[in-house]
Length: 616
Image 1 (cartoon, helix red, strand yellow):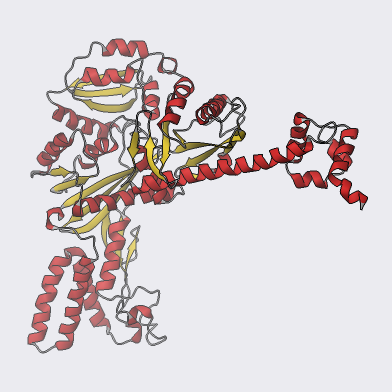
Image 2 (cartoon, one colour):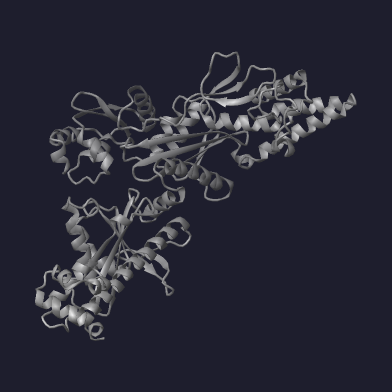
């Protein structure tokens, strides 16, 4: 259904847009009830808004859905693109339109709890209770809370078991944590309540003031203890300082250039988008936030272009540097906005190597794993599909991929196999086999054309849920010749499907991706290369297996023709009914008649199959 059919207001919207000036500003899309459904900014209002309502517009499905609901729109002209950006952020925050990226992260409020008991324990909790315990927070998410609790318990060797003290004193031997110096062994009963209270006091100060001030304080206390000849106390403080330093080293190492930085990367599987933000302060990872979007980001902007201004709008903790996985058209504009908001220079960069690139990779893995958990896939599978889509220059992630291969023995037993990968994993119940019907002699191009046409004709066949599904990408086992042969059929029946070939080297390994005019190298693209290799190996295996099976049937069918009364069509009818040679041998004369042959022919066939046995 085109936009004209989906939205009867298209003519009105085009006419209104033709009057728009080429000024910068903000446009506000509304539905028939007057509700604001989308807000966007534009350097040129006329050019940007008219792109939504063009007759030949090729929108992404989500954008098309939004445009189909537009009844009218307003606009506000601004004096600069910078002012348009600020106004857009403010209006989105105020109205929360359905089709804008709304920053709903995976967090609630979290606290660090110091229990109210003779020997308190430090834990991470999600809710504050009226129980006389000490609560530190709230924190915006569980990551920083649990990380801090794990670190403080390790540094101060606090017990993390479920034992109650002093009730559990000397009841059992110390556990493994004591022997690997992760716990002071409170269960031995060798630490007084006063001594333990002092340690908890230091631990709370460590949480509230940070590691740097805690190390400075403990350094002074250690020196003072040494002067007072309190060597045991000095040794404990020395070990604690080392534990703090070790905890800091366990963080992702970054150089001084990235000590105050946010690292942002995204992952997209076609239906779900996750943007991960890693926050580094004073050279340490201090927080992580994941933002998950499902059918909400209905905009043609790059995900990060829509995300960044809304994420930082109104924040007072903007770092000196923001690292991104890709360059954005609005980089300079965003840098100007954030610098003015922060009152300091904010640099936005796209690192290609070194520690910066390593941090981007880690943020990317966080986003990928988050989506993987939500859609029951592995992070490697999703990363491979996304990487493949980028290599091919596709606008959307190829979530549903079909691949085809032709297999034959000369001009006999010519067949094709179709396999399906969904989200990077084989979908075997969607596999299909094709017997070549129209091509009489060996011709891979003609066979592939026949198979693709027959397959695409089933797109309107609702009786098969897999055949009626439109693939995002078709991969042919072959080079540019195969692609050029099939391309006219794709353009005729389903032009929205991306088409490429898979080229092999002399050792039958995937070497490159074929287009109609050349090849795209996949060397250095490890994830995409491995996915392509899996697809090519699987489609080859599937088509060859079908060819061998059909060849065996064809060979036996040629034997059946020797029986009086059986021709090629009758032989095929018998093979189709019984499926296997063994099933025919095991059939009685009555069973053979069930294949649709007469009693006389069934008798002739039975005699042919078992005649020698009967004479013995």
